[in-house]
Length: 357
Image: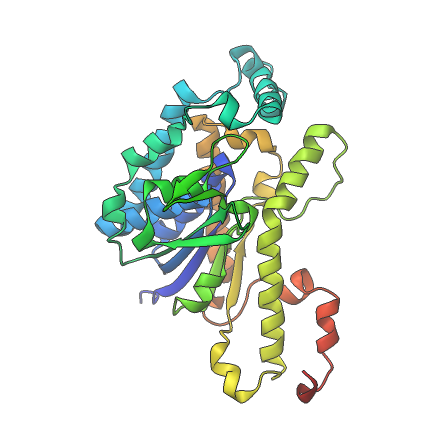
């Protein structure tokens, strides 16, 4: 007898070329067929995957979505062959040098730390724009009703997260969500300037609480949350700081979810307010083991062998996750929120009677 399909929401982190890992996760999810996607919140590279997923689903269902994801990443590789300034030289590849030690990356990193994009890139050239326009018809994407999109960008003036929905989508919104301020000028949308959403929402989860029916959220991580060793070398320190920075907003939201779940679990919410609380079930496809060997420099790689390696690791991770956790969807969390995300101050509420809250 066929397994009944379950509906979930997805949260897709940003992380440059490491987004190919999420491509693999989505590819396996779509191929498996037991999960239907209601909503997707995303940032940066996650936005690219989310747009390709929604566009493909709108045009022709799961198989068309798989093709749209493949085509996007192939176009990234093809564009990178001529436009990517951060590439290993042939002799560097032969010597097995990592991207972080390549002459191109060292020069590029120094350039972006010395000059702003308003100086070294005055015409704001960004090949990603052409890749997106070739892969996705944004006029058609705005008509998508089969997948709800929630795309995060950082509002430069206020420092707050702005969430765009499918009806708001445009090439500028997608580019704003992935606009790293040390590489590109701020992207203007409706007269306001935006940077990469990863700084304040990587991704922002809250739209999934209020604007979807499904209780289940599967977070697809791109930036490793945990590492076993303290970095000692300068590139490794910068890499870990990058991971911590781009995980911080997500971890704060996870702590907030954990706290609300604790209030509900211990019946600390007055009856008249209970309807306003959604008991979200949190699931997590982690990238810690799959991506821990790669530095921040590799996020600039457009090499097809590298991208498909990450895709295959994502497919394998999702296959393992489905095998272990599919039955839990709709029933319980598969992330230990209490131990992983609750702070010590939050535990002050655990043993206090309801009327004291």
